[in-house]
Image 1 (cartoon, rainbow, N blue to C red):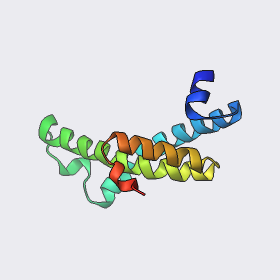
Image 2: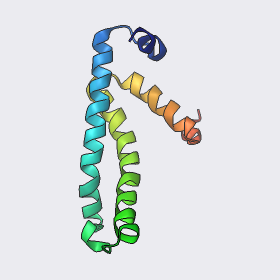
Image 3: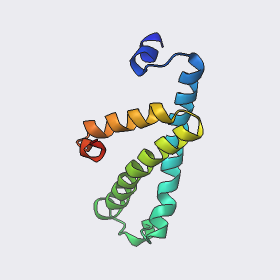
Image 4: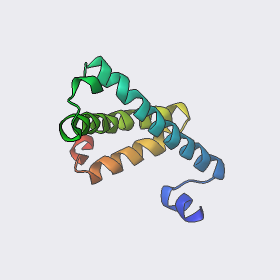
Length: 107
């Protein structure tokens, strides 16, 4: 844990625990919210054919593709709620820049 705290610039075990809790809540919540968003867009599983490739694959691909942006927003929001906005904002900028989206944060 010491190396992780040094790498992330964290000073206490309490702060590390809060960060782990935020990651857990955000991952679960983003996966949970993807289905209602797809339902809102009228993209339910029943709208796709029964064959796996054309039906199930496309539906689950859309769901996973939707989880990614939901996760990004919720990570910063939940970090703010738990008082760790500075850490998660820096984490978010670093993660998106590694994915080639660093141009979103040019100063």
